[in-house]
Length: 404
Image 1 (cartoon, rainbow, N blue to C red):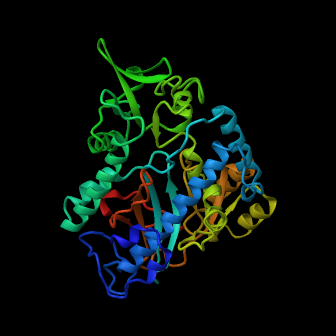
Image 2: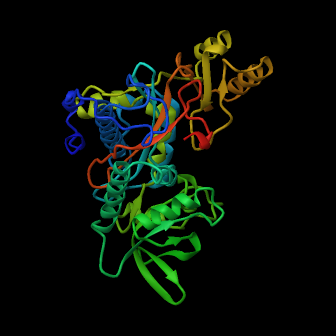
Image 3: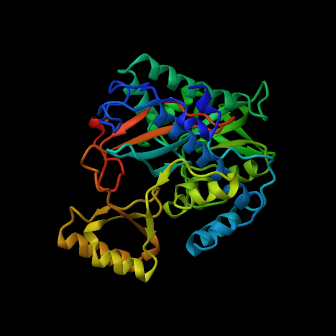
């Protein structure tokens, strides 16, 4: 377990013994032969593959936001380049020394009935599920509690030992409001890093630093764990009508006077047309072959793609390119004629908004979705535990939380 955190790709074959985690740890059928467990070599492959993804994405986003250069491997996607150029223009010059793009990240995997592991989704901006995983593990085996506690310590240490930490400064968790659907998640993170929950009205930017205002007292803030989407984070930088963001926060972060995790711009890594390029990033930046495959994805922005979709709609699932602004997904194998017609009209009206994926052939024959969490706060770390769920026809997780 210690070795698999080192990032050595050869460790995917280090063990042939069936060191298993039972259904008590992962309450879902799996694909490792016995039907109710994952082998250690599968966990090692997952850890190595996600380490590759995190490092490659971090290098790519550094190029975009720190060096203000669009990598060649992204130039073939006009809509993605246009979005990146717009974000770079909003940010301006980033003068801070380093950016931790994946302080906390989640990755959704499809575990096929044959044991094949495929990346479906990822979230590097405002990942969710930690609170649910904690509750599930509360009913599980001791080894999962240890794994999750290790991740919590990793997150807390990376905040407490940041370069901006002083005796009189604190970390805060930026919470949109008490009625946020992620309030439990936010409270868990606040307990994890030993930081108070703060809303936009309690934070102020003054003299180039962020301060927490409580009554007549002002306290310097060295780290903000943000639980607000990128476009609402700072009304001076993104949407001017945001009431849950802190004016001037991005400028202070850009100048290196406050840590912001996960940093603004990490929403780019959630875009599905960006994630399909991650294998190319791994080869380009790390000079390694990807350990994990990624689900085949095609944007609906070309006439050829729309024609293929219209000809065989029952073979595809259609989702929005940006998972942070979703619409109802379309699954061709279960859709009615009217639903198919409505989907095709929506795609033809806004083709750049949608992507299509081929349906998984064994999604209803033993395959399942697994969400795992990782951190790049002070080097890569991934605990050997996750949320197992039944999957939809394209490998994505269902929303039936009672089956987790």
